[in-house]
Image 1 (tube, one colour):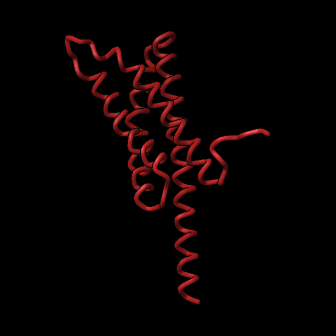
Image 2 (cartoon, one colour; image 1 turned 135 degrees about the horizontal axis):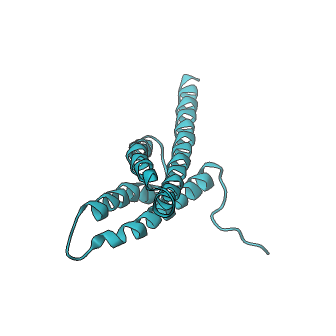
Image 3 (cartoon, one colour; image 1 turned 90 degrees about the vertical axis):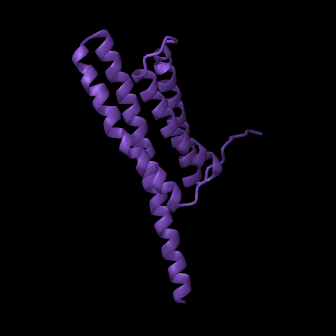
Amino acid sequence: MTANSEINRDIAAKSWVKIGFYATSILFNVCLIAQVLTVGVAYFTDPTWWGIHVWLVRGYSGLLLILLAGLSIAPFSNSIRSLTVSLPVLLALQFCSIRLQTPLHLEVLHPLIGFTLFYVSSSLVHRVSRELFNKPDAVTES
């Protein structure tokens, strides 16, 4: 009887980790949306918003550590693992594209990498919700 209760506790703990992972992925996605909005306001309206844009990326980067830790605790599908692991890679490319000054002007890739980061983050939220709530990936009508 105790073996079953330990297994049930383990399953419940992993379920809470998955819910926390889902909430963290949503928060990361919302931060990306806020960052895109603040850069737009900074560019088109008020340059003082640039500081908020920079502050946001420094703030939400820590969420990646939580997401990576969640991968090591709870079982997730390979697609969720791949999407999660690609986020820090894309964020590192973001930092490099804006910091490195090269004759090739790689800084022009910064917005493209940012939108790719947003796409991957949104896909992660979608995939986790599908896995967490046991929804099929494709909806087919007969």
